[in-house]
Image (cartoon, rainbow, N blue to C red; front, side, top):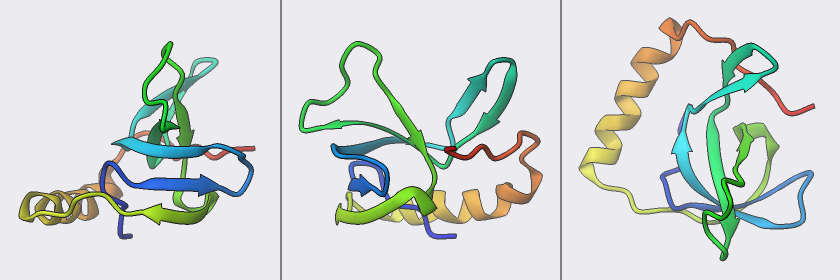
Length: 96
C-alpha cells in the first residue's frame, strides 16, 4: 500500500471540509477498543485547532488535491511501514 505523505490535502467521500494529513497509523481508542486508522488529519486551511482531529483510511478519500513533500526519508519510511504492517497487533478500524 502506498501512503500519502504528510501535508497532503484530501477531500473525504463523506465530508465537506478539506483535510491535511498530520500523522499516519495513529492509534484510536473507541470506547476501550484500541485500534488504528491509516491517517490523522486536521482541517485545511485552519490547521490544528482545539484538539479537533479526523481519523480515516485510504478508501475514505474521494480526491487527493495536493500531495505532500516526498524525500529519501519518506521513501525509507514507506518501506519500513510495508514491512511492519503484517506485524501490527492492533486491529484496523474503519469509519462507519
